Image (cartoon, rainbow, N blue to C red; front, side, top):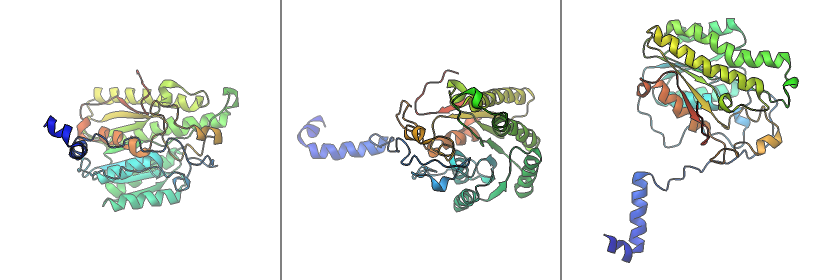
Length: 317
C-alpha cells in the first residue's frame, strides 16, 4: 500500500481526500467571518437581525434532526433573534413545539415563526415586556393554553448598555439591566416550575462576562454573575426537593447577534470577536447545540453546570 502511495501521487490525493471526508478531516470549521462586515450601529435594543451584515447563521446547513425533543414544548425568551432564534429553529428540527417571547421586533419574530413552521412544528409568538410581572404571568398562561405543558424553559433575553465608568451608569439603566436580565428570569421560572415534571429542563443564558468581567459592562456582567449563581442554586434546590427538573446554563462568548450592533459603537464593532483564541466572533448556530444537548435526554445526569461556548477562552469555574 505504501508503495502505491509513493508511485501514484494522483491516486494518493484521491484516497486521502476520500478518507478525509469519512473521518471529517479537511472540513473547514473556521470559514465564518472574523468580525462584522459593517460597523453601522443600530439605535434600538435588542436590535433587528434582518438589518445585520453579515447575516448571522441560524442553523448549520447540513444539520439533520433525530427527534431528540419529539413531543416537547419549549418556551424561549428572546427567541425571535440571535441565539434565541437559533435555539428555536434547532429545537423545532428536533421535534419540539416552540413558544417565543419577544419585546417588539415583529419582523424578526414573524421570520422565526416561519422558520419553525417550516420544520413542521407549531410556533406561538407572545409579545411581552419582561419588566412587567403581570405580562410574564399572562405569557405562561398563553403558552399553557396553546400547548398544555412546558417541558423546556430557556431564559435567554437580555440587555446591555456599555459605559466608560461606573459613574456613567444611571439608576434607570441599572434597574432596567437587572430587571430584564435576572429579576424577570426569577419571576418567569417561579411561574413555570409548577407546570413542569420530572425530566423537564431549565436552561439559562449567562455569559463569559460572568467569569472574566467586562470593564464597560459592569452592570451587565453583574447580572450574568447572578444568573450563574441562580442556575447553581436553583439546581441544588430542585434536586434536593426531588423534582427531577434539571437546571443548567450556557455562557456564550462574543456571538454575532442583534444585541451587538445595537449596543456597541463603530470602533468596538470593527474588533468584535478578534480577541478570542480562535480570532473571530461566533455564530448563533455554534451556540444553539449546547442548549439542545442540555435539553435532551443525553444530559440526563447533568444539572447545575454551565457550558462555555466562547471561541477557546479557558474558564476555570
